[in-house]
Amino acid sequence: MKQSSIKEIAQALGISIGTVDRALHGRSRISPATRDRVLKKADQLGYRPNEVARSLKLNRNLRIGVYSPRHIASFFDALRDGVRAAASSVSNVNVELIFRTFSRLDEGDVELLTADAHRTFDGILITPGNPVHTELIIRKLARKGIPIVCVADDSPRSERLACVTTDAHTSGAIAAELFARVIHEPGQIATVTGTLAILDHAEKVSGFAVSLAALAPDLTSLPPIESHGKPREAYIQTKKLLMRKPLPLGIYVSTANSLPVLRALEERSLLGRIQVITTDLFPELIPYIQSGMVLATIYQRPFTQGKTALEILVNYLADGLVPRTITRLAPHIVLRSNLALFIREEA
Image (tube, rainbow, N blue to C red):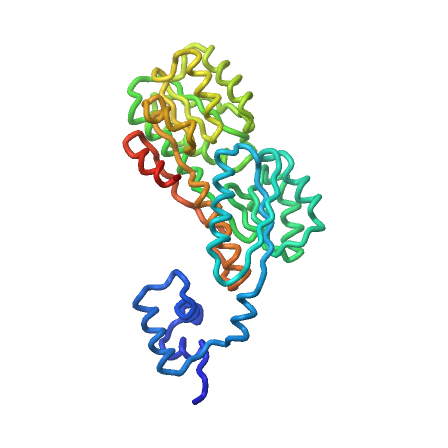
């Protein structure tokens, strides 16, 4: 009996070759009913896998460079953990991760990529800083045939393969809506961000300002304060803010650099008097949410971002699956009432 091919199974069922391949190799993104149909038809047609090709694929090594900032560690450590988790769950190839770190967003990323130009990678994950600075080096690497996936931020004109982020504009809009629901008097709202030249930070600030103007016209959004990811700068800028009259009714911290802001508020005994919405979730922030001193935090799901980004890159390298250009994850709202669910998830 002539051995059937994946193509013949696909033609017999009127489905794509990719769907047949996912069914035969136990991959995701296929319904149980379709998987059963494929397996049944494969048995009827006498399909047998090409063990030689399969063995070659199983023995393939992928060397992935992972470029990310050291600061802010509460966010980027979790992102790197997600990358590791994705690598450890890959069954059809051996994934070697080479972690390369630079100081913080827009500080040292271009220099490190340039210095590493001699390194051999099958693919690269990177959290880019200012796209004006990163797009040339990323484009150069992409044109050498290295697929690059941006994670947690983007460099859209760099010819990168794909990007994985949370929806930054929506994150800012959620924060504005929460303020609109709990503050019922005219006043000002401050925003402490990172660097407005970084797309993720700019989009959060934009989403916040647009949503606040639409939902709470009596609340005025003050010009954003840039802390550049530096704790001391965030602390000093917040202290200056709190010396102004009138005091803001709320503060939105749009990056994970929230602890210095909370410390400045504590020193002035203003926690609880000024509503605060933060970003992300880490152990030091939990008591503030539990006590109600922080109204909510907008969780950017760094672990999931890292895991998704590596899965996209490996699927492209190993199986030729071309990803969508941008994958935007929904941000999660963490309140005192649902905090325990997220603490268990992080554990």
